[in-house]
Image (cartoon, rainbow, N blue to C red; front, side):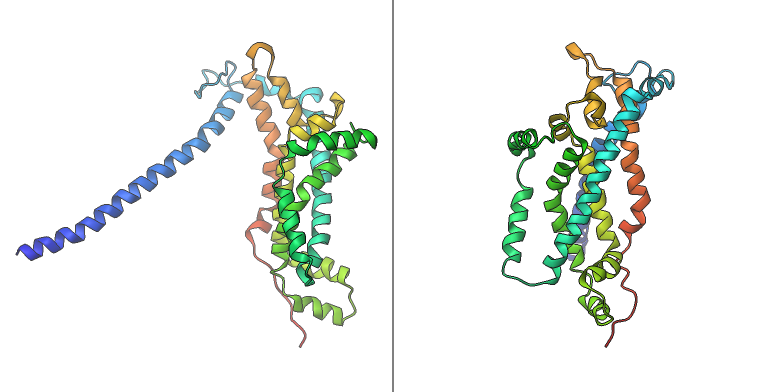
Length: 288
């Protein structure tokens, strides 16, 4: 009888431990979820609150006055257009250059591949603030300061190292036999890259595109340093105008602008979410 009770107790002990661990894990997940949800709730509620503050509270009366105040060419439309030009052009340049650089690193073996990749990895660890002083001096010398094209080039150059790493890893997943079949039909390496490799690694291209665009979209320091004219400032810099002197902040307008400012990134993700969720479409046959 005593042995039966002991065995039941032994069975209950691991079960109770699992329940406690599961409860602790659930509590941790709830805390992490709250840490993400509360700032988002503040943005949405404050954008509709005429008396918004730093507190997360349900507004006494819902209003769209904050959106009416910011939806003007000077405050929102021109900065958003500048952001789209800067980030869109730099993202396109980054993806093209990353694909061209990753292709030989993925397809051709050389003793220089590993040192080159390690150099790229080191370049990704450099803080942007450490190189902005020489970059600013260089841009002044070559007359590219306060120009959209100069900022686009620097955006692309700053994102290119990590984009090459990502692109190469995705490109390694495309079988080389498919390219060899295309070469047999007379295709060049550039044609096989354009018609075989890139279409098959669509999720990889989508990841590089989203990552590069998001990192550039939220960058404040680079355009703040390289652009001087107010009419060329992107939205990531113009958002600073909502912080007034002596600690005065227009919280409602800031929250409304944040929602509008986040819309292009959300739309970009929605548009290519199918590519992100899919695998490599390795269709077709390989010649024997």
